[in-house]
Image (cartoon, rainbow, N blue to C red; front, top):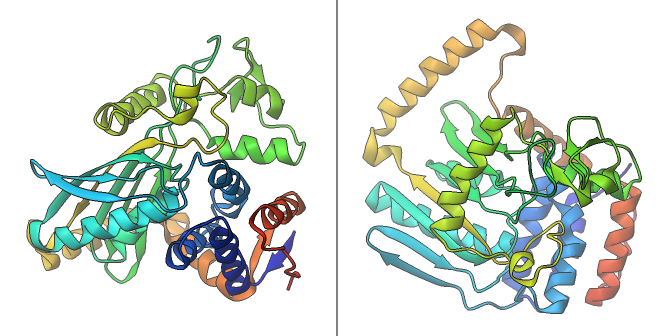
Length: 344
């Protein structure tokens, strides 16, 4: 893989989004979220998604300039995203919830009709870096099923949680209910590589190592029925509470890699108003110290590795496979912003 200078690829991606109709501020925000996703090591959900987002912006499935509206009802913040780009509206919605949590302590939020949010941990991290706890879930079209199923039965419905940690980087936990994120299968298909047995089933319900067959079939849940149960919980919170009907469901088309008009559920909690900052930090420090002592040299909490990797990639550049670079060239043509960056 070649590496690309972080600031330059962020600026180029912002120019591509602007070329597709986003305002300069929104284009810059969307680009920063995607590039930072790569910087923190989630390569399947960052820059690799840029082309499909560009195609959806070009077709109108995603709106470049949505009429985003925030409304509070019965103690719940509702963000009506109007099919806006998820990286932009998601960040704006979390910032609004953080601002309100400064006075209210706990802010639950429903995000309606938003574009694919990709790495949910990026939005939970936004809350944690503001000194608060963040929790984010997103419903997806059916992508997952138990072995033997003839077709996808339910979304792999990801969730993420983040918290500030005294004296350390934020804790960030980000998972899908599938054994692995579907983005890993998309990456394997893009690079024409097999996938490990146990990731997915084909259209007949049989385990497969063929990435293309997996995309035509379904992802397998983590821990069997437990993964299905987790997906159902998210479906209740992010799907049924928002009434989300993703574009691929309403159109009958294949779900693809970045469904539009999904639903999300989130909350932001302010330790200052719930437990007291000193009490919260003291308790956090205590149980983390106990965890490290018992775990030995390998003991770390989620978010530590990503924080170190982000510092490295911000200074040394973002590694991109040739297949993704090729897609950025296609995006550049689509947006009228030719991709001419050279590796560092």
